[in-house]
Image (tube, rainbow, N blue to C red; front, side, top):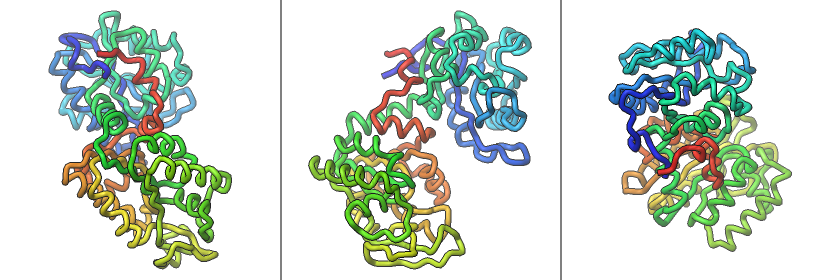
Length: 399
């Protein structure tokens, strides 16, 4: 396990914290979803209790290595102030003289937020010199706290290189993410079920291959299910299919059989003439999808078939929706599966939800707080499920 902010003396220190404030900003210049900001509050509050001077850094969006007003972190600083009930000093730059001065004169118990770290072209190059400039803001006695789970799969200056120059530990959010993923990947309680959805098999190949060595069953929904069905010789009509992955899907099904992992694919469907809320749609109680129709959700028999498997599981990981849940008529499958996983949680299962679309679905169906853990990082959680090590975690100090 990595060291966390609990494991070192932080009293009166200057602390550089990498947070993930890559949040949606509306046309009115206000934060539209403050989940990631709220998730960072326990770490920030703890540092303030230790009388630290706190310097926050994050990226927002994809500016091309130069300042762009629409990607400024100013609205984020404003929202953080409201949530903390404490003023946040907003820097105009990152490592310019004025910002260095603000950092140097920052009193203990105060917060400074740097401007979007990606406004500097060196950030995404994991540039050592840039990392030195950033760490100079807290001085040689400073500490680096990594709390941006959503960014630890990238080796960038602010997530990776900076950790080489300061004592480097996890914040509470990152610690929680690591704890849950370690549990479901290294010591899961059985039966262990994975629920995988989303559009593409290609996005989940590594995940499926890694989980085949750990789980008892994999429930597959979403558009990726049609590539698997096609590999079994089933008609999928005009459904979204990755033609170049059909052989691979066949291979994965064979591997699952060899490892005695039960793969459950849809046996009935909601189908539509097009992916549109005004499209003609209907339920079919059989597995073959007729020509001219697109599979848009799993059917009620599929839900019945998997419900006992979900409810008797002791560990569940869910990544990806079961259908086009953003359109009300095609959202039932995702909603029912989400509710079943929530029920399993209530019965004592450890449940981890990862991936942006799954998290959006949880919010849409008002199921927040009903799972053991909702991950804050889509890409990072996928890479952990693939069995990869993440550079922003690897570089931190071990206990």
